Image 1 (cartoon, rainbow, N blue to C red):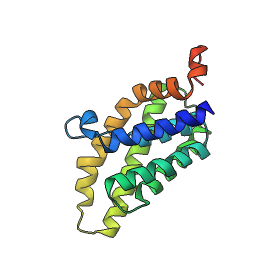
Image 2: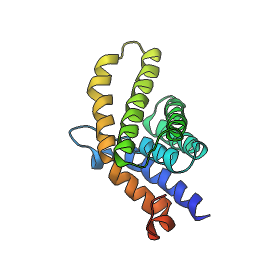
Image 3: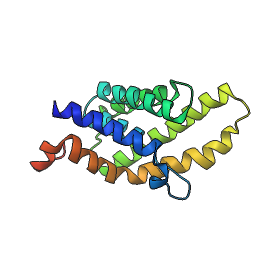
Image 4: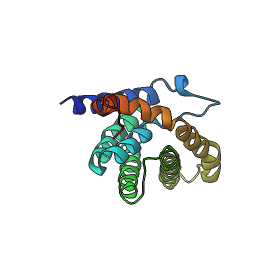
Amino acid sequence: MFRNAAWIIAIIVMALLQTNWPDVLKLQNVVPDLMLALVVYLALKESAERAMFTGVFGGIVLDVASNSVLGHHVLCLVLGGYTIAQLSRRIISEHPAIKVGLVLVAAFANGVLYTMIQYIQNPGIPFIYTIVSSVAPAAFFTALLTPLLFYLLSRTLHHKNVAHGGLT
């Protein structure tokens, strides 16, 4: 019961921070993708299903809050959660550098996929410029915040394991 309540609260907090208070997180006009970091964390620590459900719920909140077509964030987050969960079964993902690398790759792929969907709907969007000026910096910023975010998430979502000395 506590895990599900903490999971829902984590989705709401990440979505609120990312959509309503982006100026708090902004560094040089770059905002990290907190919802993607949560999806990757759950894909690594729990299961593909939990990560994909998080992608659905968090993506709906992001789509509604960003006033975009419903489903863009959902699709990108669900695909990212599934892919990272499948990758984490095949590699040793406990090292912090691996986690940062996975978040970097997932954030970049998520941004490219989202920009591609926008470009298909509106070809007037400068695709390459958007990737270089917006997606890449946001992916690097999200990856830089990964150790802090994963520590905070492990303290809130898996508090029993951390209190007993292990991060599982």
